[in-house]
Image 1 (cartoon, rainbow, N blue to C red):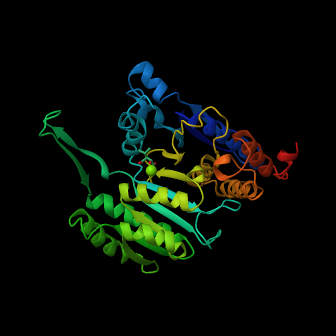
Image 2 (image 1 turned 90 degrees about the vertical axis):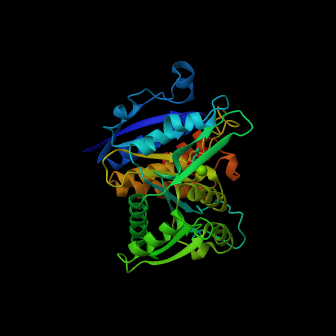
Image 3 (image 1 turned 45 degrees about the horizontal axis):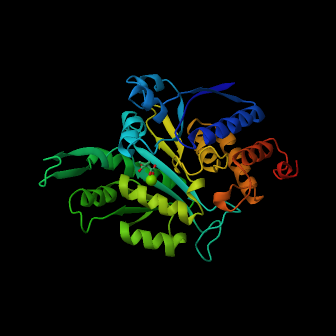
Length: 363
Ligand code: IPM
Ligand code: MG
């Protein structure tokens, strides 16, 4: 029997609610699959930990996580902790410290979920966004001078390295190659940003030569926002810088019906370190503690985690269960339903057990 060790970091806001739901679903999935098990360890890091200890995770945090097979992450951010402190105290040190350079964001309209786009149904929007996750606009490089004085200066330096761009480009071409349409769109802003972005374009052309079976094209990020909205069918795999893909993936989530269902994997493709899987939605303080958080993004990111762990059959089984439950209309209020987090979780567990997902509504 294969065993996988998972470090759960529920952290802030609705993170603990959705991670608890995700762990329940993973336990059910392991039980019905019968050929693997999950051992999970929960870490209490996040903003509460910060209020007590002055840091979001202990100094040896990465050391503690290193031996796990994967990390299952909830959300970080609290109203009384500045966002750049919480982000740079927990999530980014894990992404950057473990060199999880590929951020993978599958986006699709799930059955039963309504898109704000006219004449667009499931199948018309089926994308994988590959976000560079280790450098670029999130390199953390820059500073402030003359602080507080009228002549104050702030710089935020985007760093693009040949190694960093080449490896994300190869990764994106490989994902595109693995999908039926073998289609990749490379996003930059190389008209206005004439150094790093032009290097992106050049490296894209170089790497493309290694993948003659992949069709690729280039888009400027502003025009890309238009194309995603007006011609979603023309896109398949998308690669962009850290910030561009951050913005485009929020647009993608909204076009697919809700950020509440959007998952993400922070992947170390070389498998030197554990990869980290999380919902995109964040802490959502307006609904924290109400029991109505949408757990679908957390389930979908578990699908990504299982694929990464080599449990492809279980991953497919979980994705099918998620789709059945959405199609049956068992959904949380953010996507127009009346179910709560536990209803959706129980329905997915029932679907995994091969029982009718709707039985939960009747029970
Ligand atoms: C995301 C989020 C984060 C990011 C925030 C929380 C810093 O928006 O995962 O897309 O920008 O990376
Ligand atoms: Mg974002």
